[in-house]
Image 1: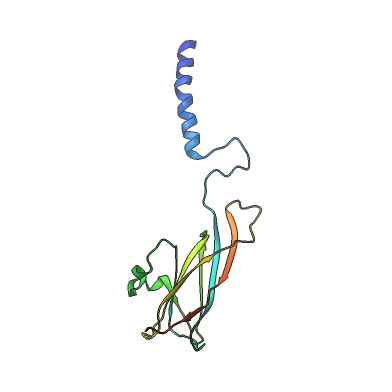
Image 2 (image 1 turned 180 degrees about the vertical axis):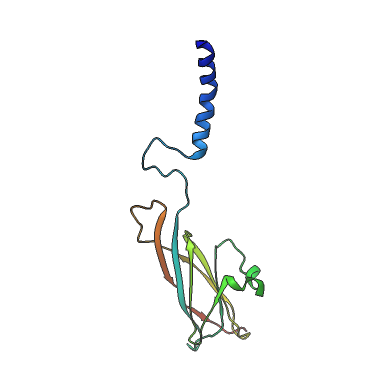
Length: 149
């Protein structure tokens, strides 16, 4: 009888270990084994032409660097961009944890050329009691658009 209990526990032990590993239990009290860092970011700026006049109704698209901005240049992706106001100003806000973003400016005026740039985000305001929250990041990206030749 004793031998059968030993074999059964020997067979179940690896199953329990695998189950606990899948559930994410740890021997440490404060260990966060699984998760994704997150934060908030804000990119704002101003769009002007070469004569320093504000460019209204320009589309500002904020995407990951590896993405192709032309795929978002259609009405079905309207919620992916923000528009500049009469003063040429814009603000784009979102969450996540990108370290680098590409900011693309597509003017409504067909005389002006589109432009883009990369921006590095630096997060601050990390909370001590939240291991995955890395705070917020703010950046200013201004565009001075040139005329097409």
